[in-house]
Length: 119
Ligand SMILES: *[C@@H]1O[C@H](CO)[C@@H](O)[C@H](O)[C@H]1NC(C)=O
Ligand SMILES: *[C@@H]1O[C@H](CO)[C@@H](O)[C@H](O)[C@H]1NC(C)=O
Image 1 (tube, rainbow, N blue to C red):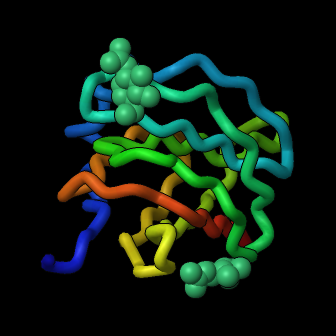
Image 2: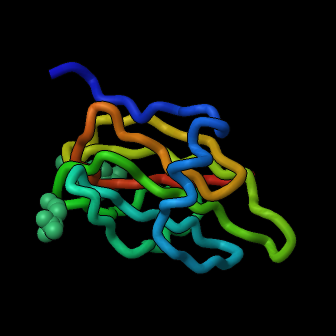
Image 3: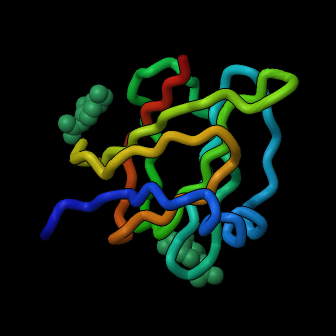
């Protein structure tokens, strides 16, 4: 099986996808992550502490898209990088975002851990 990669798509191509994203709330320290399965259903947003440490966030099933909302400092979103690992810890790639973004997982893969960091 070839190595999976989460494609960092241009913001312009994500505009349509982002509008179909699940509802979410914001706070200063958490990045919000929701998984979308190939059948179109999605999870609620989970809080991931934006501290550069790997956190267990199992998707349990294959995921085709990840919605990532960076922390909001009260005035604007904070530039945040998140990397994703399979349950085996194999790297699935990383994204760097400065606004809520839906990122395709290509090819679709199960996710086990998420690591988010902002400077
Ligand atoms: C969609 O797929 C997810 C993950 O495999 C599953 O948990 C969910 O029940 C499915 N929903 C429908 C409506 O098929
Ligand atoms: C994957 O990494 C996490 C956090 O770094 C660790 O707790 C876990 O034991 C690792 N799992 C495997 C299967 O190596």
